Image (cartoon, rainbow, N blue to C red; front, side, top):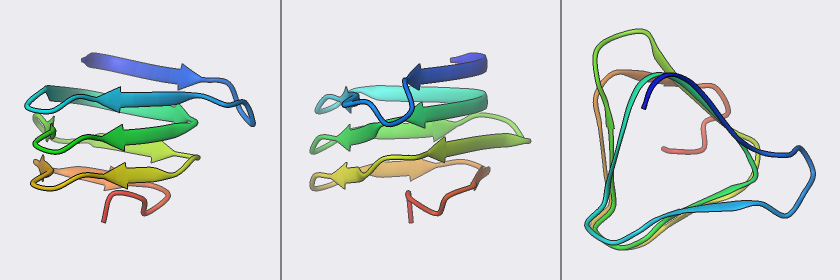
Length: 79
């Protein structure tokens, strides 16, 4: 993903799942108005600098989830 990405609607039942062994590459800013499921073996890669992610829902992480790169986690959900 390059640029700006928004997923879901505020206060609605929305879930985005990153499947096992899948990679989500982010170069820019992403906003999730819902939950984010990171299944076992999923990877999020932040490419470059000045990246940000905002998650208003819950984050569920499976085993061996990898998050790499430089980014600002505005809600502190990926830590």
